Image 1 (cartoon, helix red, strand yellow):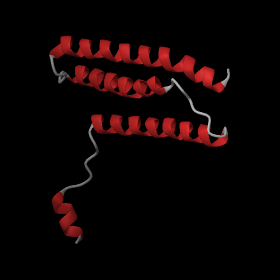
Image 2 (image 1 turned 135 degrees about the horizontal axis):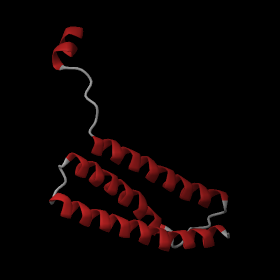
Image 3 (image 1 turned 90 degrees about the horizontal axis):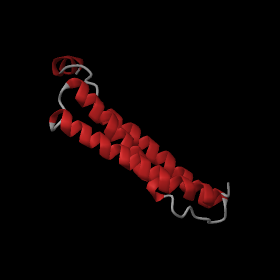
Length: 110
C-alpha cells in the first residue's frame, strides 16, 4: 500500500486561487456567525442594511487574485483587463463599506 502512494506522487498544495477562496470562505463564516450570534443574544434583533458588507470579502479576494496574476503575467485581458477588474473591486469595497458600516453602527447603537 505504501508503494502505491509513492508511485502516485507526493503532496500537491492547492493553487493560490483556491487558498484565497478558502480564506474568503472563513471570513464569510465569521461574518455569518456574528449575525446569528447577535440575533441570539439580543432577543432576535436584526442588523438591517448591513448586507452590503458581504460584498467586501469577495471584492478584496478578487483584487488579491488579480494582483497575483498580474505579477505572474497570467491575468485575462492583460494589464488593461487587470486594471479594470481592480477598479471594479475598489468600487465594490467602497460601496460595501459606505452602505454597510453606517447601518451596522446604527444597528449596534453606536
